[in-house]
Image (cartoon, rainbow, N blue to C red):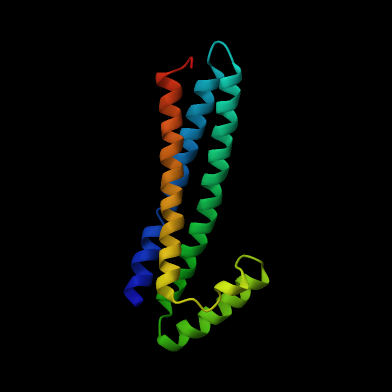
Length: 143
């Protein structure tokens, strides 16, 4: 179990690179759309979509980064007793801060690992959608 915490926290730390790539695509998309000779309604719509993807990318970054830090902390101080106590305290804190519904408290770590991976995959999908939007706007500049 200790190795699960280590591997997943290490994997999730890649989230910073994904965010940087997202900002690069975001900036490149805005520059491309801005320097387009004629701004159309479609270009303005694309700019709004680019902003929405970047906001979503940043949201996923914050969530995944938090998960990575929590998992890393658990890896460093791993023992069965410490993990159970920490899990209870973590759930209470997340519920208090309205970051988790009460019905999700006490879940097994296997389910939590799956949730972490799901968020990470959503961040990757968002990055792919950003890149796809950029390529579409370059290949088909005048839809």
